[in-house]
Image (spheres, rainbow, N blue to C red):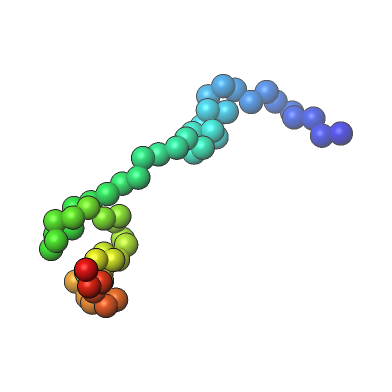
Length: 60
């Protein structure tokens, strides 16, 4: 049976578990439309990503 050689300290255990915390989603304001969007994602309303037209714009 596997037995740990040393005790894992509270600090090291906390470092490992720090990645498990839920983080709030980050949004940035779009320079052209002024609406909030996720960074490094296509603006679905206009279809523009990094100044280039990627998708066709949605007609409302």
